[in-house]
Length: 308
Image 1 (cartoon, rainbow, N blue to C red):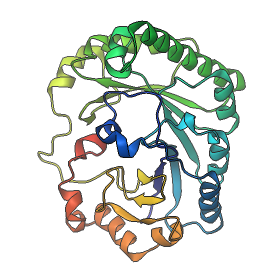
Image 2: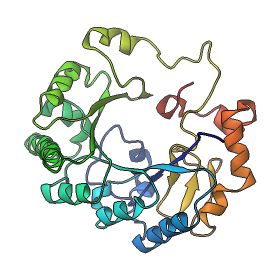
Image 3: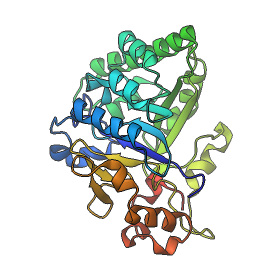
């Protein structure tokens, strides 16, 4: 389809150094947090195949994100450098705890386009409710200060090197954190070095990326993704195609057998993406929505990753 590009999310490791209460993978932590990691050699092989034999639909964006913390993957900078041969935009999503100056330097030098840091709250008290599970309050205070300092150091390094790196802050908005809404905006706006964007997410999904303090009450009370009067459509199909550590490929971030379209370690990834089955799905989602899979029509994740 003209103008349509593909975006991927790759799960590098099934392990995390935090247990955030908003993380969907905590619901089934035994299977998602088993320590399994994606072989770097296999990952390079996939990128080599995409470079040598790209699919008919152009590739655009790749985000290293998933059931674990990508900074626990030792070859992350090398993986980013390799991915840049194939994808024009490569980013990571991290909780920021391990984002040291040394790691930040390596990520910048690797050509990373985006680093999104998940940190909720402008105070240790609010942060503790969301990302302080299993820790004493003193430990949470130190962790909160560490993440803030890591983000500031990252921005300073980016500015010194004059690199086009987007630094995003991803924060959760709901009853347990709304008291920090304006404080959070001001904290990141005034931080030395400067972040590019603060992305506010509700526990039910992304509702808006740009909200003024005056409109906050309206923002949280209105259903901004209501389907009334709109034609149903999924904006995430093909944009957040997920690759798990075992090579399973999914059409989006809703991981189940209905959305799984193959395994890239068993079948060449370009062959999967050029298949008639996948191309029919692309056409269905963008031209004939009534022809999309039945599962997608009743997807419960619509408010988490799509606009209806």
